[in-house]
Amino acid sequence: GSWLPITNGSAESWLFHANDAIEKVSEGFAVLMVHLSLKRAPPAAVGAKSWLRRFLNYSFRRWLSIGPVICIWTLIYLYMFVEYVPMNNIIKSRGLLIWHSEMRGDCSARSSFWLSFLLLHEAITGRGSPCHNSDIFEALFGLDLALFALLAILGPALTGLLWPLAILWRWQLVEEGN
Image 1 (cartoon, rainbow, N blue to C red):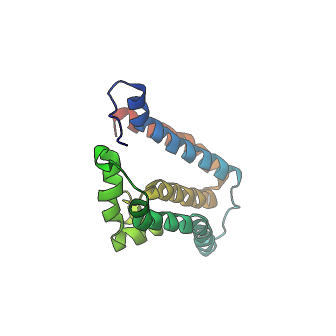
Image 2: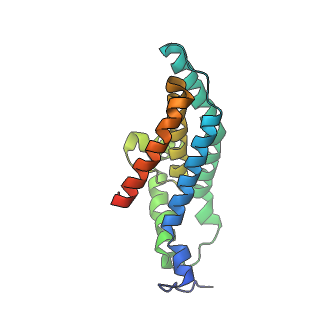
Image 3: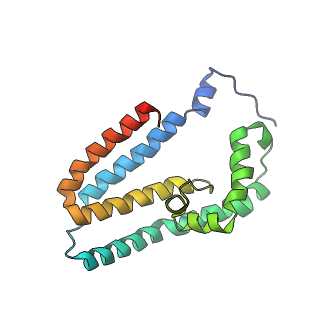
C-alpha cells in the first residue's frame, strides 16, 4: 500500500521531524561514554613511547569491537537492503530517497566505504560518512580515542574538569545556531 502524507502540525509530523530529539540521543550517548570512561581511567603513561603504544593498542581493540559490525551493516545496506527488501513508494519520502538511493551511491565508492569501515571518514575528508549510521559510530569512536588520550596524559582529575567546559561550549554553539 501507499504511505499517507504527513500533515504539518500533526503528532506524526513532530515525531518524523524530531531532529532535535535525535541530536539529544546522540549527545546522551556521548555524555554516557565520557562518564564511563572517567570511571575506568587508565593509569598515567610514562614516556611518549609508552603512551603511543598504549594508545595504538587501545585504538585497535576498540576498532575490533565495532568495525566488523559497521562493515557487515554497510554491506547489507549497499548490496541487500534495497534489492531484497521492497521499498514501496520510496520516492514519496525525501529522507528515504536520499538515504537509500543518493547516499547509497556515495557510500559504494571505494574511498568512502573503506574510510567509513575504518571509522576515519570524517577525520580524513572533513565531512560525515555517506554510509548509513556509520557517522555516529565514527564520532563516538573518535571521542573515545580522544578521551583515552587525554586520560592517559592528564589523568582523570584534569580530564574530568575539562568535560563540563566542553559541554558548556557545545551548548553555546547550539544556542548560536552552529
